[in-house]
Length: 97
View 1 (cartoon, rainbow, N blue to C red):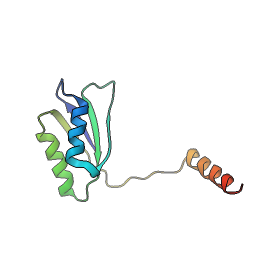
View 2 (spheres, rainbow, N blue to C red):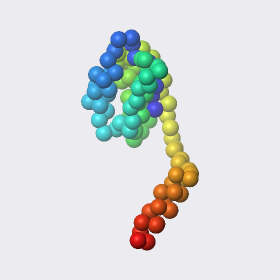
View 3 (cartoon, rainbow, N blue to C red):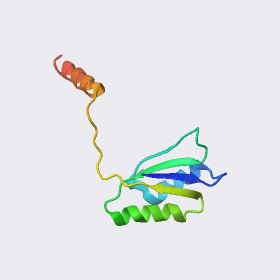
């Protein structure tokens, strides 16, 4: 997961297109917040630390990027909530029809 502060005036659409070109199928999610004008976040999948370090170095070397904060997520857990239980319940009801 990488949080980037773009240089003022950088077009986010063009930046995201370039990220897609560079990392393609490794992209999990990209976003930009309207209340943080030059901030974007990019979540990439990496098979190894070497891949993760390459992505970080690539962002740091990009002339469009002012600053880069790179984080490594080793594990992600998603615990079921009422939404998942409701979905399962509705699916079971639909199967019973």
